Image (tube, rainbow, N blue to C red; front, side):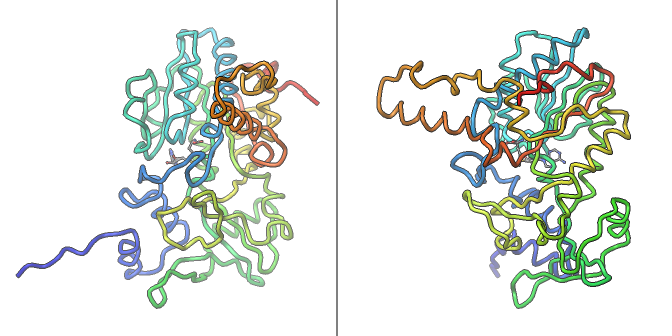
Length: 373
Ligand SMILES: C[S@@+](CC[C@H](N)C(=O)[O-])C[C@H]1O[C@@H](n2cnc3c(N)ncnc32)[C@H](O)[C@@H]1O
């Protein structure tokens, strides 16, 4: 007898798993984003960029790569070693690290893009001098390293917690009448400890979106960087702001699809990005414990302006640019606006924070430390 093999989908995978018991929300996010076949980041058709589900700084404007390449140039100029290593962790399609490699004129750097899902890196990228690998451990540790990450930490799976009176609960995912739904369970003691150690008291009914992976992954970056600079750009706050009972009573978790944001985190897993703002205090402390000094912690706009982003051609006065057609003019206006969005005070220039930590190299005199205003 001929039988049809059932079509496997993300929904059928999750339903199967849920027959064995509920999933923590964190495990649900792991599947929704990184399931090897159906996860959001495993599918090249899920697009990040101006026409995609959401846009990141490297894909918004080449002015971002220009500013970061200046930083790379300054880093390489300050090192007397024969070879330094420049790494973009969570490099996505590789736009930033490819830009940085193309801008290098010293010939004294090797470039690595690290991402757990390399499916979005184009085949043309393999013909460049950038090596793309899936884990940090595949990047050589000898010599000084400049480690950059943009929106890596906010893409790590996170847990949802909620305070109910005296009790801290963790949110799990269950199936009810064929639909995914929430289920609260008493949170493991490790989460009580997490907040107690940070002297954070959640209010009754307050939600918190949080991951212990933020600190663990950053500790790993520090461990594999005996000497160098770690530059982290991400959505997030210091912990007292992140877990503020009034301002962020419902946490920060959000799902993005087609440039729209929703709080319906369980809907259509695999078709949208799920993200939460990170606790920068965890990263700062992890770095300092590993012997790093904090050189900069502020908004992206300040960082990019100090690096000299406005010297990029897209910031030139309009009168200095010649155009041959209306279409070219319209395109240029759009590209100029995109470049400005990186540093304007009402978008990613304001919302993304930059943390720079250093060990075993100069702690002062970096361009990004310039006081502008
Ligand atoms: C929001 S995207 C940002 C991509 C890129 N940095 C950009 O700005 O366009 C986050 C990226 O981090 C990657 N990622 C998540 N967890 C990772 C891990 N543990 N190691 C390496 N990459 C990871 C994801 O696969 C994804 O490509």
